[in-house]
Amino acid sequence: MRTPSSLLADRWQPSAETVRRAALAALVMSVVIVLTGGAVRLTASGLGCTTWPRCTGESLTPTPQMGVHGIIEFTNRMLTYVLCAAIAWATLAARCHRPWRRSLTRLGWAQFWLVMSNAVIGGITVLTGLNPYIVAVHMVAAMGLVWVALLMWERGKEGDGAPQQLASQPLVRLSQAMVAVIGLLVLVGTVVTGAGHHPGSSSDGGKPVDRIPIDYDRLVQAHADLVFLSVGLVIATVFVFAAVKAPPAARTRVRELLVLLLAQGLLGFVQYFTDAPEVMVGLHMLGAALVWAAVLRVPLALRTRAGEPVPAAPAEKTLQAA
Image 1 (cartoon, one colour):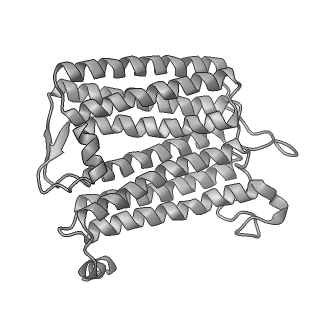
Image 2 (cartoon, helix red, strand yellow):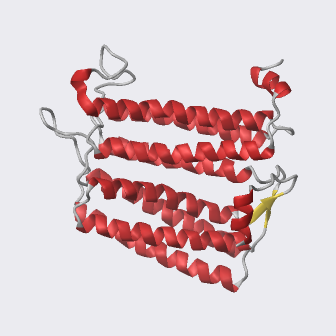
Image 3 (tube, one colour):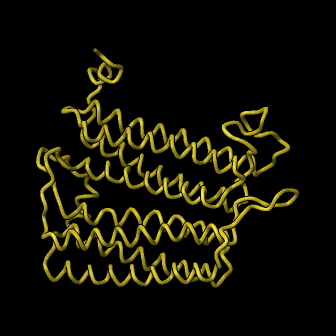
């Protein structure tokens, strides 16, 4: 049976570079949606639309009486469609490429369902009055989307054969340990936010937004401890990778991770001692997404896949050569 995608594939065969650019667009949008979601919280617009999936009980869009908060919340909802368009482009490009990149198509569909599930979680956060635990799950799901989008982008330059390790198993496990520790760091960060200064909506004229009932300073200390652990582990990995001559791409990526992690840690300390101003918190959320993407790239540089690889773009070739 012919499907619309197979009919499109008869008429459009995008190049390998087009597939990779489309996957990169989906990855960029997955990071952008994290940033705009943070903007909703930091501008106290989390309940700018009073219900879901409509903005009000009677209107799909915000009304003039809702003011700027309604516009900000509604704009973030609309950006979900832009994200879906980027994912659709990447998925169709993988489907129409010759040969058909089935593995990339599956990753594209995985992104779509992650977006749909997170839209439902976002709706639940509104319907529960910004319950801090649901908000934390919303952020974790967004980071899951970044993971899958990054994997699709990285897989775009590989073949579709079985993975082949380029390094010894201890190095692979070390890189996986970094992913686990930094993943825990991001997770604890969502809990810190849930107990912190920015509930996501003003309580003026209504019920105050609940916060996670754990001492904020204790949570911040636990988060800082994980930062020190993460930095120490990444520094150790830099030296280990250099000593055993790990693949050049892996050594480059772990150095990039260290720079990002140090910048993110510095930003976090400044944020804490300046009473968490909105701009600093927004930059910290962007940094969290970038650090998460950076650590995920390290184990991917320790293996390759057989088959015809997708040629790298000129800028990427320069980076790999460095």
